[in-house]
Amino acid sequence: MSACLEIRSLSAVLPNGQRVLRSVSLAVQPSEVRALVGESGAGKTMIGKAVLGVLPKSVRIVEGEMLIEGEDLGRLDPKARRTLIGARTALIPQDPLTALNPSRRIGPQMTDRLVRILGWSGERADSRIRQLLDEVQIRDPERVLKSYPHELSGGMRQRVLIAAAFAAEPRLIVADEPTTALDVTVQKQILRLIAQLQRDHGTAILFVTHDLGVVAKISQKVSVLYAGKVVEEAETAQLFATPQHPYTRALIAATPRYTDPYASLKPVDETVLAGLAAEIAAADKDWRPSHG
Amino acid sequence: MDEARILRRGLSPRLWLAGGWLLVALLAAIFAPLIAPQDPLAQDLMLEHLPPFWLDGAEPGYWLGTDSLGRDLLSRLIFGGRIAFIVAFAAASAACLVGSALGLIAGYFGGWADRIISRVVDIWMAFPPVLFAILLVAVLGTGLSSVIIAIAVIDWTRFCRVIRAEAMSQARMDYVESARIAGYGRIGIMLREVLPNVVPSVVALLSLEMGIAVIVEAILSFVNLSISTDDPTWGGIIAEGRLSIHQAWWVLVFPLATLILTVLSFSQFGEGLKARFDPVLR
Ligand SMILES: Nc1ncnc2c1ncn2[C@@H]1O[C@H](COP(=O)(O)OP(=O)(O)OP(=O)(O)O)[C@@H](O)[C@H]1O
Ligand SMILES: [Mg+2]
Image 1: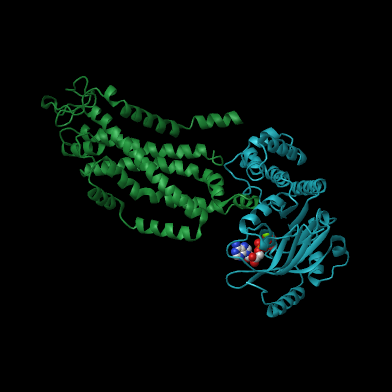
Image 2 (image 1 turned 45 degrees about the horizontal axis):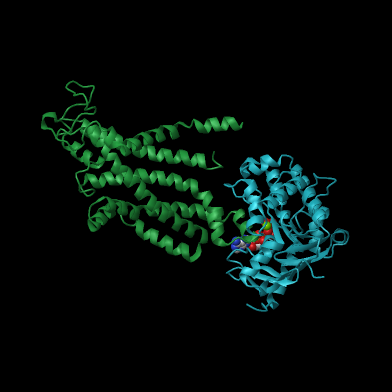
């Protein structure tokens, strides 16, 4: 059985030649949650955007393959690629406010995709959306469906977006820091909801976060990203028990324990970062894009 | 809470005042032949420079007085409104259609489309607008349609610039990206997702532009470049009133007041509508 998502040696550069992704490889198996962790600017969002086909114009892929359920995106023509991505993937975005169209009511906004893209009947789409709103524990679907996005709270909006993401039964969901924009109490509920729906629907998730606490809670596998390079990947439990790479160890050490939330966040050790920089410089020197 | 909001929206005074004046002026213009107390063209030298109704020497039936040829001022203002509104609606709609469409395309697609459209706008706006208008009318010849064309040709850039900037900021929003991921085509996203978000601004600009069209038409009439027939226009009346300001101030003041009130009402009406249309603002 082929992986739900497979990325092979993906590299991307900016117009000035700077590399934002350095031969990234990772796989997400069906029904698996793969965390992608790393500090700000590591390229986590870039990987998600590359998979979903929405990289910024300035970012160019120079090598590598991406396969969704065994289908190589690079071999498809743009239209077929869009159709495949539209049918099999979905995004749970970071900022639930700008991810909803401010001038359209929630209801039509949610059903529109099922009807126009997937060709469902209006009634089927409507009952599907209501079912999903129930699953994300929205108690007054009537009001929510009639609301404009700005009339809902941040947590409510994120529930709506989670419902929308699962509605079309995608095989893969990219969740890009889905709780970062929310306050702490809501974060926990949202995280629990995503985990719940993921189990119920058997959806694979590429879960982008910079929070190791979240990683521990939700994922089975982890890839640790630094400066666009995967420095370590492992089963989640194993990563915490026996981190292999010094950067991972430093990252774990820098994360406050959940039993002691007031413990201060320690910066990653300087020598570790220096070692990483040397490692990356060495890799860059030998690197030639295999095509493009 | 919902009722309070509806109440607040319903009572927005600027929307009502501006809309009320525009409605009255528009109805008067449409039904001018029924409403106007006198024939706007009928001259009677016995009646020249009659004052408005509350002053000594006023004649019944000539509410706002008469001009130097004895024509009834109120009737001339009412008939002048016809041309003002025709120009306002036709010119502003044409400018809006062209400018908003190009602005939407430039802002949403960016890249080459944006570079070309923005360059054209820059060049266009380098011409001083009034000079541009006079030049155009001189080339096209005077008449209602050339005034309309001139205003549309000059002012589409106003729509283009504003709508481009708005479409551009909308295009960066995550909901546009989500629509891309879901599989919508670019043109579909532009029309279904982005367009509704710029409509409030389009409406506000459209109303403002109608006011501007009224002014430009008045200016062109004032310099005698507008409609060449005898039909009264607000600008034409103002031009005549200027000549007899010492004998009959009302011939200048009433048309000026009408003009200013109408122009202000258009801009306030637009702002009010925008606030009402925009789900985030209201
Ligand atoms: N539109 C863009 N054009 C060019 N470079 C970009 C663009 N967006 C981001 N970058 C660069 O690409 C690199 C990776 O950015 P990315 O957004 O993927 O980081 P991230 O890991 O998601 O960080 P964060 O945790 O802050 O979201 C960064 O160095 C960033 O400066
Ligand atoms: Mg990011």
